Image (cartoon, rainbow, N blue to C red; front, side, top):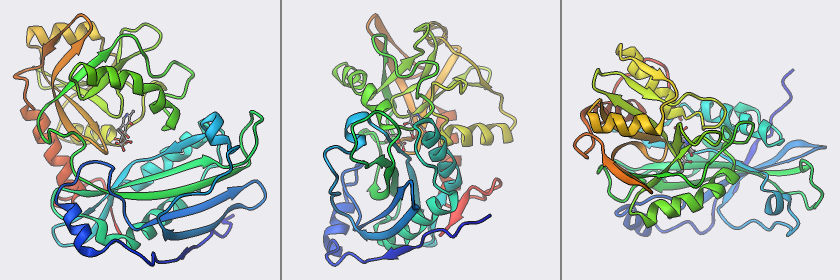
Length: 362
Ligand code: PLP
Ligand code: COI
């Protein structure tokens, strides 16, 4: 039974950023510092369900200081990108997968689910309103759908009011070094997610918990932190904001399995499909930090890379930890990493054909 979905009222921003300023800002795009003119907002409460959708000028929320999110962190988010193709068309990559994962996160955090069509409608409408904010060339428009508990109540139970919002940010490379291989710090003091915890959900709390380890990584001259499993401190799980793959000397790849403590990355899933299409063996299996060190030293490990929406595919050149460090392969981004990155990017940007039907035209 299809209940009518709310519509998004469009209220154009009366003071959009002047075109010259926008184009100037496009010349030096980093990650997550520049924002578009609009946002999508949608409300939920126990009585009305989803209601009052609008595309409106991006701006601050007025929320009650007792809003549950500010106390108990009931918040989830997604990360996806809109691209401008060489022909000037606007495309999204697998948005249904973000909608599905958003609802999985919502279930884990005892939040209301949003119909997938409504999630995608919010994205489509916002990208439509802010299409001029999609940079040409290498950049993209990073979309950040999120939902938080807005009910003013200090008891500890799932809130009864939520706000869903999508903001948009034109972005360039996530890492400052661009295509240069990144350095990874393996955290032995901190873990990210324990069995039964929220590791597979994209909730803000996971990232809050990762920041001290990420700071340790930065203090040691590294770009990202890698976490080991919480139970044994032995198995490589994922990075602070990316999944990880290992390229072996026999051409096969290894990536940690999804077991509830890591984020099921859409990039990860897409790369596994692309590699399998080409007959490449990809083993989703536990890989220990001991094995990682031994394989890097023996040369059995040729390459490693991080992958995610923000980072795309980034070669890992060096690994550091409290007891020392090691180099992977030549220390530069490897051939397999470069090739799979290109294959993915070409599909995402509509440059090569799309055998899995991953690209959605807006
Ligand atoms: N792991 C974590 C912790 C992340 O934050 C992300 C980024 O979204 C990923 C993995 C990669 O997920 P995806 O490829 O869906 O962006
Ligand atoms: C993404 O890749 O979309 C993320 O959410 C990860 C974060 C490091 C920006």
